[in-house]
Length: 411
Image (tube, rainbow, N blue to C red; front, side, top):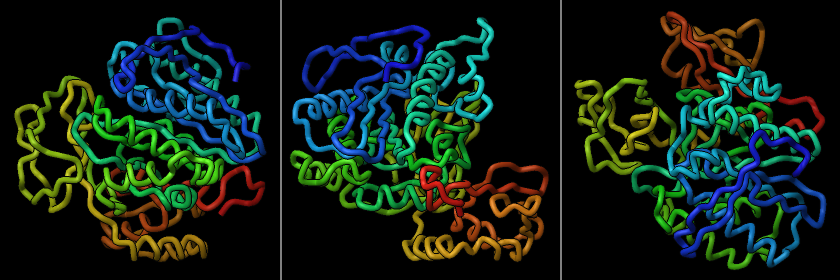
């Protein structure tokens, strides 16, 4: 798409350690218009500059699509997030580009409402990236999917981050990787949370360790599977579809469990944080087990659970997460309840009331509410957003089963 204005048109060189050569990378890696009308899918790599494998995978797959010219129903877009940070191999330059997608900041980016003194690198990157995405959303009334490609600082099996909407569940239902939900309760708005709030299915895929060649292969597999799951391509149109499916299946050892984030250890500017060495993603931990030190104080596990995304790099705002498995039974129950639109019963739970009569916002009085009240809210798609004294605000996304392209009243 060329009908948007770049602040600083830029092309960088990125070393492709799979093919052993340097490649030229721009904001738009590719924009492929399909043969038939259909959904749009937007892939984004390099939101963090020290995570090059998603960008390399997009470059490889887009080249294949150009060469093979398979039958595509819809449109495929491949973009880079933080070009300058990617060029330098740093997570970010000033601020984390994936933590500045609050609605007010996006509106400022849309209007380019910034004083010259505020124009730090990530603001410029956000303005350009959102100009592109906003243009896409305005020019098509078809369904959109968004896939954000990431890697971790520690060796890890691939997994998916997503908000727990029924649209997202439908999108990932045939992907052979574990899924982690609830991240929006713990992080300032990442890009895909903002996109999800607009009503579009979206996921973040973590393909492995930052510079592991296997991470490139995992990302390539996820790109192909996303094209099929999103309905843009048939399996028979994908070269070696089974190979890509089994790439992820074997990388995860068949783990398709769904996990919920229980807690996040935040790191603030000026903090001194150090993880205990040796932890891997999804590793089981016991209550009381030492996990890290923060400003000289030992941090211990607060329950028997699993550790997730332990931080073993210099930059980062997340020390580690603690997660636990959600039983498939409860996922099925929540699916049925949400399909039947049973949100009205929530106002009858102890200590729970609607906020200004809205079914999308619930206020929980923690002095009155039973433990199961919060669990039921989670199953119904609500996520904790704000605490004030003994009250907690839970918000359910406006779009759960259907998106804005349906032209129907949303449930």
